[in-house]
Image (cartoon, rainbow, N blue to C red):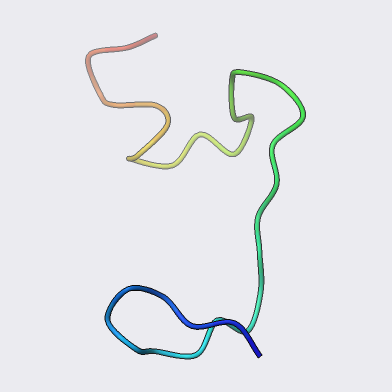
Length: 34
């Protein structure tokens, strides 16, 4: 099992195949971006 730098277990990995995320969450698509 993989651990992050804080010693927490990583249960999943998110891999992006493009340079843009299409989930439109606050991290990938801030409010000022349209």
